[in-house]
Image 1 (tube, rainbow, N blue to C red):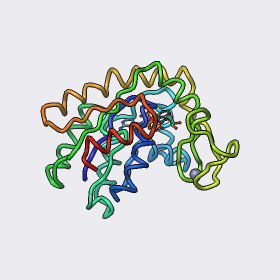
Image 2: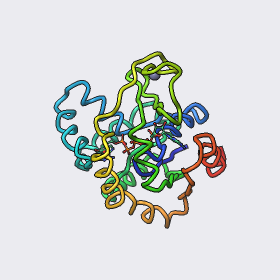
Image 3: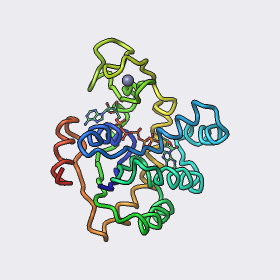
Image 4: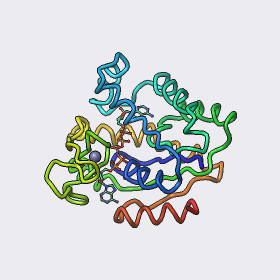
Amino acid sequence: MKMILIGPPGAGKGTQAKRLIDRLQVPQISTGDMFRAAVGQGSPMGLKAKGYMDKGQLIPDDVVIGVVKERLTKPDCKKGFILDGFPRTIEQAKALDKILDEIGALDHVVVIGVPDDYLVERLTGRRTCKGCNYMHHIKFDPPKKDGVCDKCGGILYQRDDDQEVTIRGRLTTYHGQTSPLIDYYSGKGIVRKIDGTGSMEAVAGSIAKAIGA
Ligand code: AP5
Ligand code: ZN
């Protein structure tokens, strides 16, 4: 199972990917998580990435493509993968096509559609776990204990880029650079458009139906 999740910031890509990996037994490859880990480690790549992330801009294609190429060669990707947040530009999609020429074609491009109006509330209310990366939401998925992850007991934090001004920048970036990918993949007959405005369970059900899982 090789699939891509596309959607604006806060659409629920990470939330849905985490549900799918248990069922499909393939890894979630989130470029956002990978770069946040690099930022946390203070590596040179992390320092460079942070400047773009804090402004809601995309990290340069050559850096992102290099990281994903390396990740896809790992043994756990042999059975497939869920790409969450990659590709995000036509250039990245073309680079992925070259990799797929060698490892086999994509099965699904799942596009989670959510209007911008919903997304600011979703993102300003998100609280991410430092331990396991699970995403709670103060209103839609509140933790039992304030500031503590239900899944692993880790500390919850607010992402630096989840401030309203940065969120607006990320939305502009999405509409300008990433949404053209929907047309890019449309010709291949593998795009599954999902209404992402319902509950997390409703969205999970729509995705399962669309991919036959
Ligand atoms: P990245 O980490 O990929 O962020 P993003 O695409 O902006 O997406 P998010 O993680 O914010 O949202 P999501 O769709 O996963 O939503 P979630 O499930 O958490 O990228 C961050 C930055 O890294 C980029 O800006 C860029 O700088 C850089 N980057 C990453 N990849 C790159 C690439 N390929 N190229 C270049 N640069 C790259 O849900 C959000 C909240 O809503 C949660 O609290 C959740 O609980 C809640 N929620 C989810 N679903 C629902 C629902 N159905 N109803 C109610 N609440 C819900
Ligand atoms: Zn946790």
